[in-house]
Amino acid sequence: MPHSFLKVESLSKTYPGATIPVFEGIDFDIERGEFICIIGHSGCGKTTILNVLAGLEDASEGHVFMDNREVAGPGLERGVVFQGHALMPWLTVLGNVAFAVRSKWPGWSRQQVESHARRHIELVGLKGAEQKKPASLSGGMKQRVGIARAFAIEPKMLLLDEPFGALDALTRGTIQDELLKIVRDTHQTVFMITHDVDEAILLADKILLMSNGPRARIAEIVVNTMPRERTRAAMHHDPQFYPIRNHLVDFLVNRSRDEQSRPGAPLMVRPGLAANEPGGALDADAA
Amino acid sequence: MRASRGVKSGLLSVAILALLLLAWHAATLPGQETTSAASQDAEYAKLMGKSDGARKSSGLPTLAQLGDTALHHLGNPFYDNGPNDKGVGVQLAHSLGRVGLGFLIAALVAIPLGFVIGMSPLVYQALNPFIQVLKPISPLAWMPLALYTIKDSSISGVFVIFICSIWPMLINTAFGVASVRREWLNVALTLEVKPVRRAFMVILPAAAPTILTGMRISMGIAWLVIVAAEMLVGGTGIGYFVWNEWNNLSLTNVIFAILTIGVVGMMLDLLFAQAQKLVTYVD
Image (cartoon, rainbow over all chains, first blue to last red; front, top):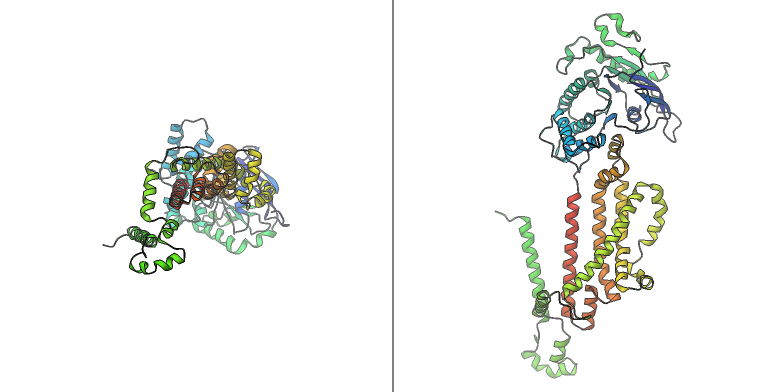
């Protein structure tokens, strides 16, 4: 079996002063071009896992390998979209994106940097807003700039920390579609935290379900068996949609508390296939 | 149509000024009581040692006298007729020079040092006791030590400005740098921004409004202190001018100098307010 693009091995994190780890035994792989969503209740350490992948935090135990090299510290090959957009308010939209571009390619001329930044601003539909300051943008537009900034450095992997959490439903839908389009066009590998079940079904190829903390772990990996060309407008007509959605909601509402005790590797489940053949719901890791 | 608040407040300011000037004018009118009523009491007044002549010589200047003095000074502000007779412009230039130099050196020390203190909790804790002890010392208390070691009154003045303007800048820079948002630093980290570039492109602009507030406070204090310092060491400067005119018993000149100090101080403050506006960002 060929090695995975990103490999997370028995990650655990115990905060200083605490005796019980927030999460432990986190193992999962991400293949190149995969879109992974992670869902779990607050306090299970999702953001910490993302920060470890980003290199902003150290795990207490375990390792992360990307392209066979251990991840140590933050780096330009991983683009991060932060929860609170994290734009620099003294820079314009163009300035914010150009700052990232210049960090990646310090040798580029001003024109190269600017045209590259402009292209990515256009990609997220913000053409015309290049000279605006973040303060004069709406929440959705700010997050678009954050996405443009992360894409502009052409990372091998994109890490998104609940990027649409603070947006209203309509804006969220539009940006989800845009993100999906860019990710599909660029075959970007993505790891994303979300609280929104529908968002996860729309975007993700695999959904990691985390049990509650402390001692949180990945209880199940739900494979999204719906066709990749799904759209927000039509996906709820797919017969697979509700089985998957019900499975996710069931887990979050009923099972996430009890999953802590179950030992062993996370189950690989395909609840979507139950729509076609009743027996296919729980076939463990048969690819 | 109602006038805007700006126009209204302007009118009110002018009215208050007119009232103040009128009160002053009324209070300093020469020989106001020397009309009919005064003639009856002339003998009494003489007994009390308050003859007309005496009253005139000890009184505060009238508005007209002040106006004359102001015109005289402003008409030729840059003459220099020896140590005790220089134009008010020359004196101001001396004071501004000392303030500018002392302030500049203080900024060159305080801002980099504040950066280090703000970035390193260790350095902050190590230096904090020194700052806490040195900060409340009146800058003029340093004067004897400065005069003894430097042996030059003008440079001692600069030193006093340096020592008084360093603290607000140091403390504000350290605070501004320490409270740069974690998320901006994380962005810089994930973009592998080198430390020097991070300092100038992320931390400096993020902390700039706080740093400039510190500079503005420092400049205000420096302008307060320079007058006192120059009164003490003498020689040149607007503070010396005030003291010299007091020795000459020329209250007109003293009042004119006081007003000049106020106006220049206001302009310095406005300058920093403008600079502050330039670096302030809306979040």
